[in-house]
Length: 51
Image (tube, rainbow, N blue to C red):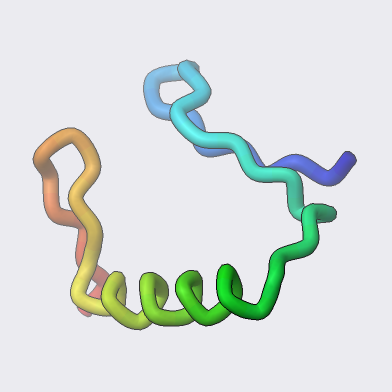
């Protein structure tokens, strides 16, 4: 298992197994979501943007 974990204040808020495989439709959705996130994402009401 190759896990990616995101922690906030030492609490796991997201985990992802990097060894999972996805159907083509799921990959297309993730590509669109990634593109939408180019303007930033909100986490706990705070916009995080990379400009």
